[in-house]
Amino acid sequence: MFDLIRHKTASSKADVLSGLTVALALVPEAVAFAFVAGVEPMVGLYAAFIMGLVTAVIGGRPGMISGATGAMAVVMVALVAEHGVQYLFAAVVLAGLIQVSFGLLKLGKFIRIVPYPVMIGFVNGLAIVIFLAQLGQFKAPDANGVLTWLPQNQLLLMLGLVALTMAIIQFLPKLTNAIPSSLAAILTVTLMVVFLDLDTRTVLDFLKSMSGDPNATIAGSLPSFSIPSVEYNLETLYIILPYSMILAAVGLIESLLTLTVVDEMTGTRGKGNKECIGQGVGNITSGFFGAMGGCAMIGQSMININSGGRGRLSGITAAVALLAFILFGSSLIEMIPLAALVGVMFMVVLGTFEWASFKVMRKVPKHDAFVIVLVTVVTVFTDLAFAVFVGVIVSALVFAWEHAKHINVEVSEDANGWKIYKLNGPLFFGSAAEFLELFHAKTDPEDVIVDFQNSRVCDHSALDAIDTLAERYVSAGKKLHLRHLSHDCKQLLHKAGDLVEVNLIEDPHYKVADDKLDS
Image 1 (cartoon, rainbow, N blue to C red):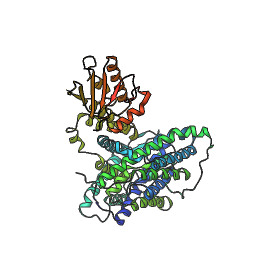
Image 2: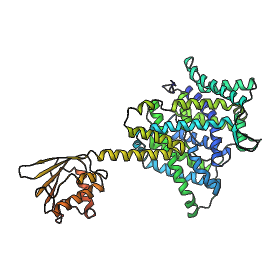
Image 3: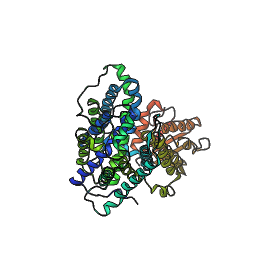
Image 4: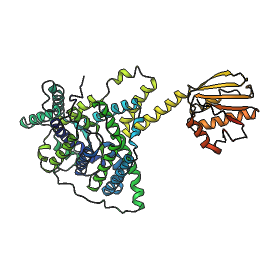
């Protein structure tokens, strides 16, 4: 119903126009996340500019937008409240160094282990989070500073403007693609509000209500270089290291998952390790220029993709335009109605949510459907990084449980009267107990062969299971022969040595023989 990908190819014109659209949407987001972190609005705006510019230039995913994000802001707030903003800058620098290390060590590839159901839950949960975040724009503080819904007339007007914005975004591309529909919608609604003198909240109203300062403005100067004013000792490291590690992890998870989503939507492939380095350099730069740092922003990235942004120029344009707004065009940006920006984000929500997942969940295995719902719910009620961790862990446990049930044996006897157990399925921690139940040491003949041609020895639990099985046969006065072990399985068993008390060649205590036959 909602076609998110309207432009299939890149062009400089599309990149510039989409970058301008993104810059307009970045302003309230950056300000809001700055308040979440407990810092001044300019700290968030500078982060949006620096992260956007650095990652656009050296990141691994052209067309992806980075800036100050809520996922990282909620981690920062405790550090700022307890130790001050300078410690935040130091923590952001250290987080950036950690991220660069991840990239240099080529650890970005591990994002590939995230199962597809987790990805679906991630984007669905993120769409819901973006939607819920926009509902705050329909509220304003009362005389006691408590957020309440707008008066009915203002609320209806804002809803009408939101609907108009969404209609323009949806239907304008059917007439022309000369200008991104999101940008056209913002400009149209803004001009309508200005010339008709409509009483609706603007970016300036939002800034004043968030800060409580009637003179608040997004006007500012260029960010300046400054080394964080903290004591450089082990005590400081002890304070910031936990925050830095969490910030680095959250930033990379959100960025690499966003990269994967953009890859799927555009049919191209970004470079995960290069993106790790780009995010790290961006955060290091942010810390030294008085900014709160950040990571990839899936909402703004979707706006960029929807508006035709595909190349690095789109991200560069968004960052430079945002800085230009701060330096020269603050008065113009401050008059943009929030309804226009909310309408844009609502369209992002509709395009981001995997509506097909409702049909998919009735066709996929129940445990996959459960993971989709679980990750979605955890994303909404906690944060994206934690939700992904939970989803991966649950998926891994389900995988282990399912494969543990697949181990079995085919029993036969050779010409010498030796009993042969031909093992099928992987031998690992999940199947070790079931493996031991397959053998009958007391009733078996004196020589027994375990054939591993269709199996693999995977971990320490598997080694221990083999060790236990050997003990059972030795106790019964019988010999156990292991055959058709793969080369890496043999290495695993020999490397274990005395740790497992099984040496297939030299251990006389258990009298375990290795036939050393090639598979």
